Image 1 (spheres, rainbow, N blue to C red):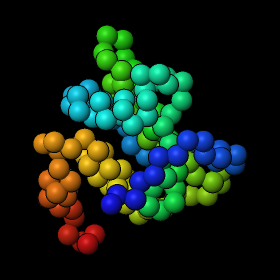
Image 2: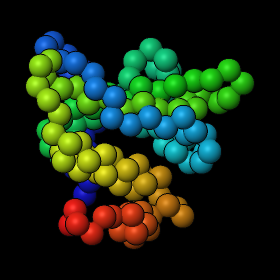
Image 3: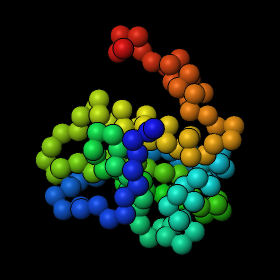
Length: 131
C-alpha cells in the first residue's frame, strides 16, 4: 500500500505551491504517460487542471502536466506541495511522500514495472548515514 489518495477538489485557501519535483521527459517511458492519462482523465481534462493527491504525511500535492509542441501529452510533470502559506516544508515528509508517489506510479503501471525493483534500485542510492 502506497498511502496515496487521489482527491478531486482540495481546499486551496491559505495554501502556496512549492515545487518539489520536475520531470521533463515523461514520454521517455510511454507507460508513465498512459498511467497519468488513465488516472487523471487527461484526454478530457488535460491542460485545464492539475491532478491532486494526498500523501502519507497528509500533505496535498498538485501534479501539473506539461505539454510540448510536437510531443504527445503529457510530456512532463511538475509536482508541487500545497503547503500552508507561511509554514516551512518538512524535507523528511516531502522525501517520504515523493517515494510513496513513485511507488504508487510503478504499482499502477504494472507489467514489467514492479515496486520491488524500484525499492531495490532505491536502496542502491540511499546514503548509509541517513538510515
